[in-house]
Image 1 (cartoon, rainbow, N blue to C red):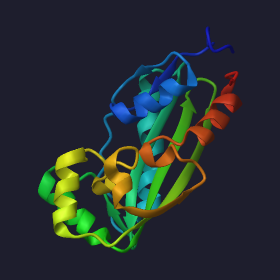
Image 2 (spheres, one colour; image 1 turned 90 degrees about the vertical axis):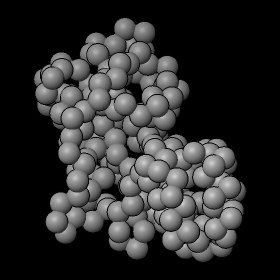
Image 3 (cartoon, helix red, strand yellow; image 1 turned 135 degrees about the horizontal axis):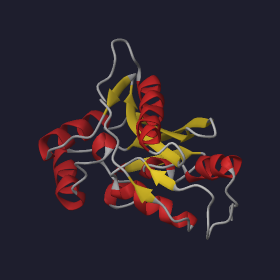
Image 4 (tube, rainbow, N blue to C red; image 1 turned 90 degrees about the horizontal axis):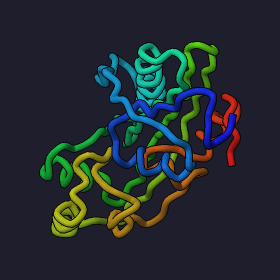
Length: 198
């Protein structure tokens, strides 16, 4: 399977512009389909289980529509002391989330799943990124939220943009994971599914 003429269509099961931008780095032609998946956590489901389940559910929902394609699903949750923190959606919630993180460590769990219904291929992995936030003031957080507008990001900040100003340190096996798609794991899965990378 070559990069120029892959045997199977490659689909990203996401409407996230961040994931789309990351996937373009692999120089593979792909299309996007927004999955219809209920992202409500189940009773007793922790952040790690939630993101793992949703990444696979997103991939499988789109793979059901396109059984011959190789489908990538991904999900990210900010794990704060065992509590799953999602996208804030509005500035006040973003400020509230970030003030909770002041001086604390948050684990951003980013799961990726690759599914091909026709071939029976399924691989999945979760990459964790530990972010230690420095001590933050409300004024700093409000200025940051106004600057970066991180309302569609898990945890309410963008590490690839001005969010670095909020951090004391970050530790991860894949620096792409916190942006929304762990490319190191993904490329291994795509190679296993038959793609030639690079």
